[in-house]
Length: 73
Image 1 (tube, rainbow, N blue to C red):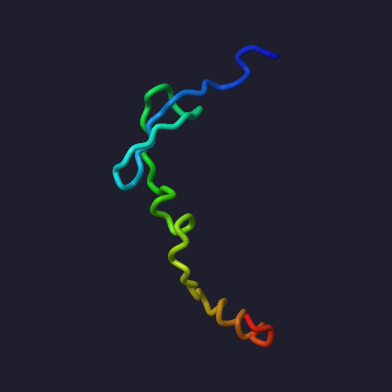
Image 2: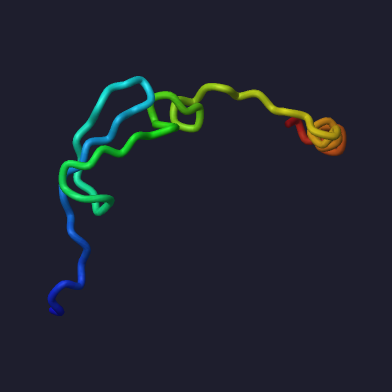
């Protein structure tokens, strides 16, 4: 195996949006650096399952629903 092929894997602190901090191993930065997140899994609707609201921009959702209303969507 070639030497110095893989990046350095070390411990960093990850600061969540609520202010809490988690230690994890990463190739980002250097040992002991702090990564501050703008969006994290504890708050974002993509991970929490919230915010199931469809935005109808230009009537696209209405047009889709009308087109396929016979299929029971």
